[in-house]
Length: 336
Image 1 (cartoon, helix red, strand yellow):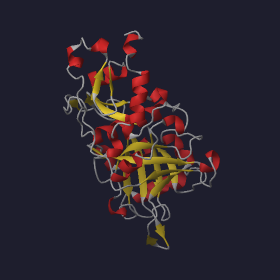
Image 2 (image 1 turned 90 degrees about the vertical axis):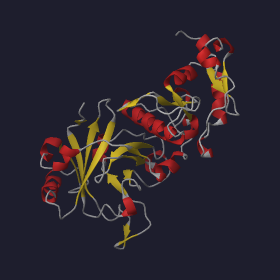
Image 3 (image 1 turned 180 degrees about the horizontal axis):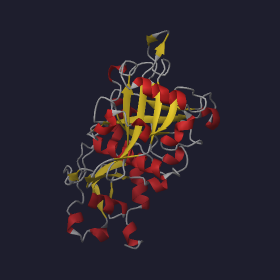
Image 4 (image 1 turned 60 degrees about the vertical axis):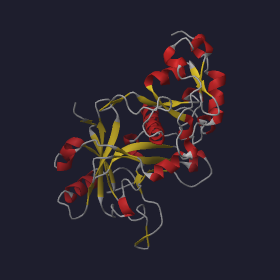
């Protein structure tokens, strides 16, 4: 099944400041793309209440087919806290900006939204330098359709106006890359999402958060079920029966910190959410007495689970206590 594209692309010309240049030299400042507020709808909605709300996007850089997890942030401390910023940024990392010098001032970047067969959203990034033959035409489009406040540097352009870009016909979705920056930043998220604000009201943002949570949890569990120890039993294109289970349920305030997740094959994920079993704080499986009659489950009673090597991503014991108190035995109190 072929990938499909949304009908509008975001085009922007890069400047030296956002790319970390100070006094004409590349310094230690972070590199990012400033996103026009007029183009905020091109990206997933972020909260105006949560300070510096962010989401991890799937982005394919210009030089690769690999999908690189990339942080998108609404720096809103001027309106949601005490600060001076009110701007959107897409941060560059080692996966999409090798050696911190791939993107240069005056480059024009084109971003398109790609939907795979399962409607998963991926952003493809194309880059054009001043010397490229497509540059002059892209620059003309920027000059003709600038977004308010960003004359000649930001524009939303209909995809049909960009048919002269050969690279649009060669987009592929490859393997997923999780840069070290994204791994480290994942641990800055609270285990309890209720500490930072309300649930996402926009479905697209919820879906993207869930997907990045899954990607990170499975990364730490090395794509193996924590209980069976087996890797992906079914892994075909966009389909997999290995999942990331929230320990403290998202609906009850569970956040996206990796320690609030555990990799489980689909049957065990379902049983965990229904309370057929829980975990102990010494990381063993405890099957509910009423579920011991199910051989598939009873054989796992008392079994020690596999935990990640990175201590920061081991199951959070506070979340385990919540699951024991609120979910364990839930199947006895609910309909099938």
